[in-house]
Image 1 (tube, rainbow, N blue to C red):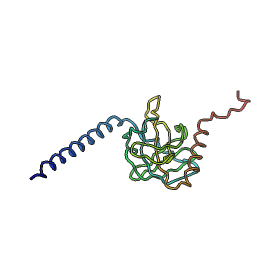
Image 2 (image 1 turned 90 degrees about the horizontal axis):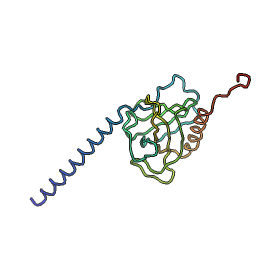
Image 3 (image 1 turned 180 degrees about the horizontal axis):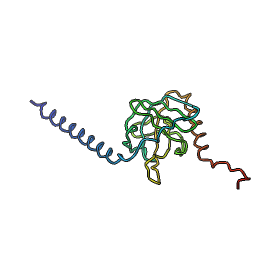
Image 4 (image 1 turned 135 degrees about the horizontal axis):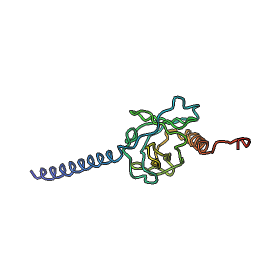
Length: 179
């Protein structure tokens, strides 16, 4: 009898925490319901420049690594395959449809140490900064975080992403005779 009361109190507290977590996730899902994961996959993405196996950690608003976005296809942690092509990046998260990020939507790529539910060694995470295709003029800026499984793939992946981002940002070459 002396253990019954503490057990009931503990069970009620745990039930309350679970209910609060469930309500918070539902509210976050409603808030982010208008956001879409990536862009339509092109018929031909071009030549594959690099690829890597990774763990997808989270997608967050730009410079807010502790606020997860509940975007369909990018809401939960998963094992992922990243493929950098001439047209952009294909994120293939286990259990979800592939997400395509065109080169023109990529703002930056770099290293990070902390994301919503992951803290690792210095520069242990890969941070991909890009803009969602929300249909609004400002296209919401986000950061997606990945933990690259094979460290040897990391440098080649980062270099390839920087190459396609710079190429997409560079203005089209104009022939002087056209001007």
